Image (tube, rainbow, N blue to C red; front, side, top):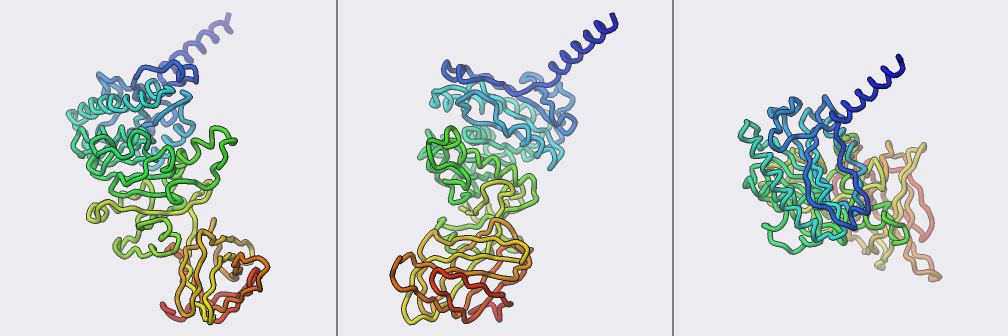
Length: 450
C-alpha cells in the first residue's frame, strides 16, 4: 500500500515538473519532409531557473513572476532547422548568458516553421516571427521596459528576424548580434529586406561561412570576418564528411560567440580592408580606437560602440584555433634582408620557452625579400608561450633541386599584439640556409625602427 502511495506521489511530482519546465520543440526529418506550420513559443530562463524554461504567454507574458521587466532582456533566436532537432548549443548558450549577467533570457522557439525542407517557405516565416516578437516587445515597453536594455542574438535566419523586429521599433532596441547571418535569399537585397545597421542602437555581425550559407557583405556597425569569413579551422573540406561538411563553418559562429561569453581568452578584432592585408600584418595599428585599442570580439564589444558609431561601418578580421579556446596569440613579423639579389619564399617560425613550443607556417603567400626593404607578415600561434627564450626560423623557396638559397637577415623583429605580452623580440645579422632550421636567442630590440 505504501509503495503505491509513493508511486502516485512520484507521478504527481513528475507531472508538475513537466508542466513547470518547458523544452524547445523537438521534431524530426519526417516533419521537415511534410513541412511545418509556424508556431512561436517563448521560453523564459533566469538565474532562478537556469536549466528550466518557463513558457511565456503571448497574451499575458507578465503573469509569470520570474519575468522581471526592470532587468535587461536577451532574445536568443535560432535559424533554419532542416532536420527538426533543437540546437545542441542552446542549453550552454543560455547558461553562459546568465553567468555573465542577471537578465531575462528568452529563447524564441520557432522550430515549427523553421523545420521544412523548403528553405524559401522558412524564409517567408521570418517576417511572421518578427511580428510576433514585435507584439511582445510592445507589451514590454507599455509596461515600463527600456528598449535600450534589449539584446537580440540571432543565428543565421534569426539574425534577419532580429533585424526585422528592430526595424519595427525604428532602431530603438539596444543591441543586435548576428551570428553568421543567412545569405541565401538575402544576399544583394536592400536594407529593408535584411538586417542593417539602423535596426538597433548597436548592430554587430560575425561571418564564418560567407561562401555558402552565410552573408558576405557588411551588415552592422562592426562586422567580424573570422579566419577570413569562410573556411574555419578544423571543419571538414570534403563532402564525404557528412552533415558537418555543410554546417560546421556556419555553426562555428555560435561557438565563437559562446567562447567570448566565457571571457577567459579574448579575441582582438583588427579593422582592415581585406583578409590578405590582415595576414600581411598591414592592419595592426589600433590608434583610431585609442585609448582602448582595437575592439574585442564578442559580448564585450559594446564597450567600443560609441567609437564605432563615429567611424561608420567597420570591417574587422581575426584568426582562431579549431576548438576552444579559440583565441590565438599574434606577432607582427618585420624582416629586413641584405642579399644582393631579391629572393622569394616562405617562413616557418617556432617559439620556445624550453618547456613547450609552438610553430606556425607562414605560407598564405610567397614573401619577397628585397635588399634593405622591410617585409612584414602576421604570425598567429595556437597558444601563448612565455617567456620566449628561443626562436627557430626555417626559410623555403620551394624550388626543388636548384641550388639552396641563403637568406641574409639584417634584422628580424617580432612584435606581440596582445598587451599582456612582453615587448618586441629582435635579432640582427642572421644567415638562413634554405630548408635548414636556425635557432637563436632573441634580444630586446634596440629601438622602435630598423
